Image (cartoon, rainbow, N blue to C red):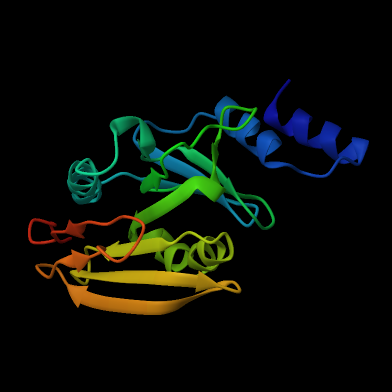
Length: 195
């Protein structure tokens, strides 16, 4: 059965679209190697991975290893968040001690302590907009946006009632002090490359 036949069958059956259905379709599609795919508010986004993007992600993961075991850190792994059809593939996510996957083998958004998104030109609006709002609504304690185009980072903390109530922005080279958050670390940004 083709993707189109699957869609027609679903439309005729009257079933509501689900994230599992959408990801199943994506698995059948010829997505080019090196592309990250996620679903934001029911819309599918495919973004090519760039070297700069990868270097920042890798740097963050290395630094987070000071607190988090490798098994509690993920990159580009599906996490379903509240709201309509939000299956995000966060650039970096760190999970609390004792976190377990749900019955379907997915990480639970309730266990996320830290998320970082590294900006890509074509999907930057998602990271600054609907994803930020979704992370705040989900109660993610620390959300970091890293923008290699402007050479800046933007830290969002204190989520309550669907919004972050504390924000801080600085340029690359300034440390990100997370010692008073669930993360409990200081992250260096002096080696983040720029685009």
